[in-house]
Image (cartoon, rainbow, N blue to C red; front, side, top):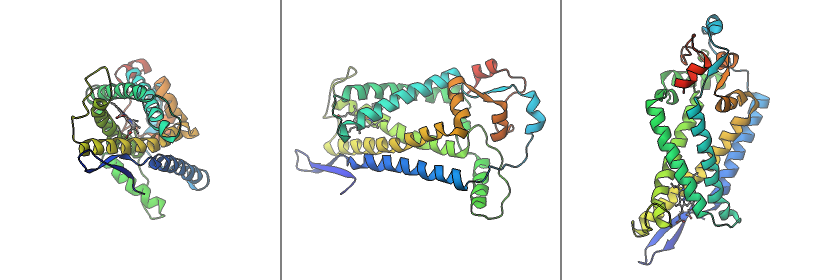
Length: 283
Ligand code: HEM
């Protein structure tokens, strides 16, 4: 049993038509397995996080009580994207696992909403937010090495506290970029295969082979997103992460949480900032 389904084209060529749908269950099980193993590890084995000392205690009193974290625009983008993402996942995969309904129209509409919100996010993040805050830097790599060595019981210094986003979040964001752009770009072309309000249907735009590969890429990235979304929601509801999740609703987090996890030198919050001003230009 392969991971791709094939069919004979009218020209007698063997072409891929889409992924094998059992991959949906592989993705669901992988997501559940990850969260079970992670939860057991945190509950029974993980030690308290330790960081090298920094200037937190000296600047604590100069900081506002609430630290601005996500501007209103960034929060709106996040929740619009989340609604589109869930709609896409359910409309795509429920019919494949036995719940039949007329899904295609809902699917491409949610696809258009996701695509617009992604384009908006790229522009917003490039010109109005701190673009580099979500990309791994040298300190992340050095600290990751220390964390891995310490995990295996080898001697290594303590890592620094995180910048605005820990390395794990940055890597997760990278995976979302790859899968998100893949479904978006293939999905826009696949709209030529169905009736939409944007352009006339044209199933002859590409050869059967090209269409087939496009459907396969759309499907692979799609099932990848099942696993990624499961892990994302899992972390969002973990008790120790709730202040971060709440900040995606209210926009800010407590000073104590900020000082516990973040290095004020790597994620600089202006001492004089008040929450309102910080969120107007914040990210
Ligand atoms: C979470 C994101 C997405 C997932 C999981 C997903 C998944 C899927 C799946 C599994 C199919 C069925 C393909 C097949 O039968 O081989 C499909 C079809 C389709 N998708 Fe997506 N998709 C996503 C995003 C998008 C986006 C962003 C767009 C548009 C911009 C889009 C447009 C389409 C269209 C037009 C079809 C119908 C093709 C047809 O029936 O011929 N999808 N999608």
